[in-house]
Length: 290
Image (cartoon, rainbow, N blue to C red):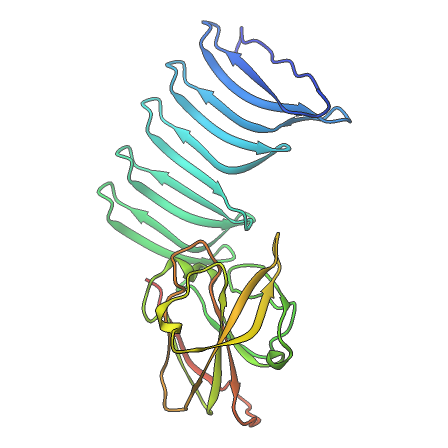
């Protein structure tokens, strides 16, 4: 508060939120907010908070739920241009975006528990990409990693850049080799998105998120009756598609079906005839991120 500002008063009203206003000494609106006092006397911001410049333009805006920020947090210049935005997504990750005075994006990066992950991008003032870097758990990475894993189990992390865990896997896939993708690969429409080969004749399975549009490249894959699920605020389900490949085949995986808004698919490979191999039978995995 500045000297001369009115100090807001909050009434409990059984814990319900109440709108409050603060003004500059000249009477112009400074801050509007919504807050509540809990039963134990704790003051919590709850609802939208907006801060105004002396000229009346919006300076800052955020939404709170029970004292914690939620959704988009934004900051503007005195002339009205958006300078930065912090988006809190439902999956617990965040998107940090900065803007040039002309409104074009200046930078964009993705965060999980204060650690940068996925692709960070810089643009010049004309909107041309001048830098793209990839991060994994806060560390610089040369690419968004796709990794071959052995012994698929409930409780494994589904992605290289998320902490989501498998909660349900059909029994016939337990213990199989699989490809742990980057969930941020959903931001790419590259085709193919990834390629690999198998050392023995194998049935390859794609577990595709039910929240995503089905891509055209899966049209000639056989849809099974089985599903995989992962944890979350609500369980997220993945329908499983199957196709058989030979050792001479280059297996090409297309894009996820839509850019963002749903989880990336994962891939499981199962030999037609079980042959003990010391090395992975999934070979030459290459993920193409653009």
